[in-house]
Length: 218
Image (cartoon, rainbow, N blue to C red; front, side, top):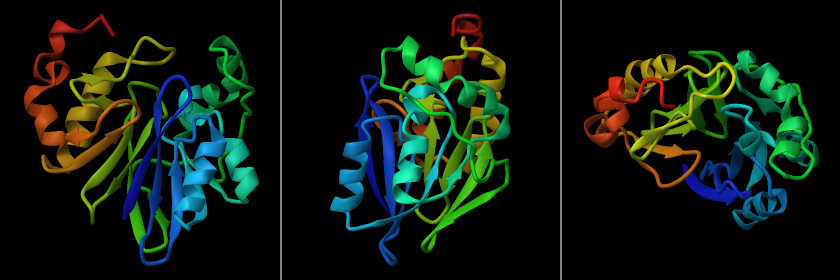
């Protein structure tokens, strides 16, 4: 699988373009905005977009979901249905952060733990990983040992849990019992900042090594 991370919006959110090299079909994960940049990357890769995938419905990850799906005539898969209220709030989120207009959308497929998303010859396993938002999901490619984690985990940090229906203990549980079970050599691509490996985070990330120190702060 060919992966290109495309930082979009003032939040520098890592939208991911994933291309199956055998079929040249692709998915875009979390088109948060700057849709012209995303479409240019698709065209530069010589790829045909097959679907849009969404980890969660915060505006910096989902602002351009509806428009990209409409422009390319493709379905939307994700997030988990517990993020419906965040989808409904997209226009308000965009206004509050001074972004351009954002449309609500109805996914063609809500995702749940254990689901599988495919494109070309590539298969993503879906994990439901609540805590940052209640409907957050991540996408794991077992063949390439890569996982797209949205805002669940970062290098040296974790996602915020002070938004509506966020929960620190739930997020720590999602990371330790869902993500880390994938294997220490798995590479993660996160929603903001550089990528890393799960094993390195398990050993060094202060939020995972000593979560009690941060409880009530995030």
